[in-house]
Image (cartoon, rainbow, N blue to C red):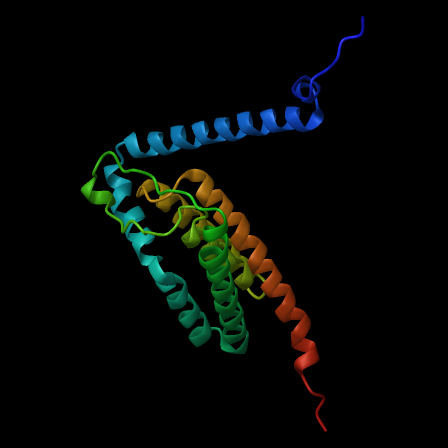
Amino acid sequence: MRSVKTPEASQEGSPSRTFGEVRRRLVKEVHALDDAVYDAVAGTPTPTLDLPVTWLSNAANYSQLWVAIAATLAAAGGSRGRRSAARALTALGVTSITANLAVKHLLPRRRPVRLTATPSREARMPRSSSFPSGHTATAFAFATAVTADFPLLGVALFGLATVVGYSRVHTGVHYPTDVVAGGILGFAMGTVVTEATLRAGPLSRRPSA
């Protein structure tokens, strides 16, 4: 006598169902690692690092740090510095809009709950979605755009951007994966803006009479 498979039974071994289970397990494990790293950073006493790391995190609020660097670059770098500053601020603006007005709304995530109050790690807790880190995204976009004209300075700025990203976890306002996603987004947007401006540059110059 032939056995009749029910729709439920036929779906148990289907590729889509198997992929769905693997995806759910993967997401669960990533969240577990995210929480573990966040808790490890939050629970590790670092009194020497707290003040400078928190200061840097707060300095990057509203992109104040990057605007100050762009102003210095424009003032001291000549025409190349002004061009680089303009490109970097454009990349910063485009990335900020993309992260805060698009990605955060498409992929909302609650902010971490700071269980321990450490006065030396006081940083403003934004009300926006935790994913991705806008501070990290704009930092990496800025560094990427500057690299086109000043490679060595770009390396230093990437280091600074990395510390800014870490500071968001250190001060308890972001999970590690928020920072990683912000870095990827910032690098991608910075690259797009840089390529667009480099291609448009020669075309925008009119030949002299």
